[in-house]
Length: 200
Image 1 (tube, rainbow, N blue to C red):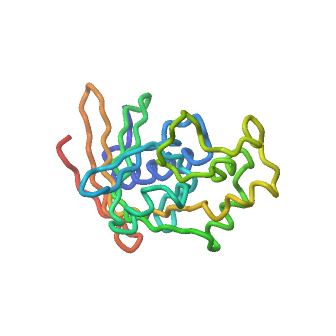
Image 2 (cartoon, one colour):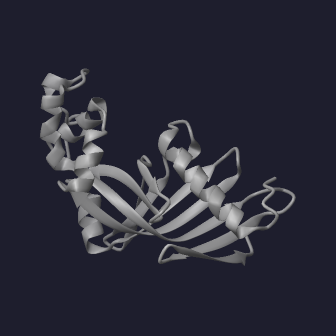
């Protein structure tokens, strides 16, 4: 069982450590959270890869294709939410966020430069994500099937590359343990955190 001596500040610090670890460790449970947003009055959810956590500004980033439906949806409604769960730790985070789309700017340029060629390949599809297809395919040009693109070839995908920055408004921390569950709500305002215990 976590031994934080019921200290919300220690819990908050641990959350930031786990999110930081989730960025750099592909095997960490927090590396692939669920991201949800609103699509025509319905909730749309999918797994994303955690690419950056900014503890100073309390924001989390992931990458996506600028042509994907979620871009249009986020342009209409920036409210979003992440769910993280670690089976071993029995720990769930529900993080309420406001999303911002970045495309062909300094933020995407920096992220693109740090993106591996095999990952850049995802942005070279001839059709946009969610396009209908008569055959099962990934949309990658035939010349690149089964191989990694060259850096020059990959640059064609930059226009389709987007970084979604998500400013954290609230964290709902839930720890499950047979000796007693614990739940804490953390509100973030102007980079300051306030805490409130909740019944799980």
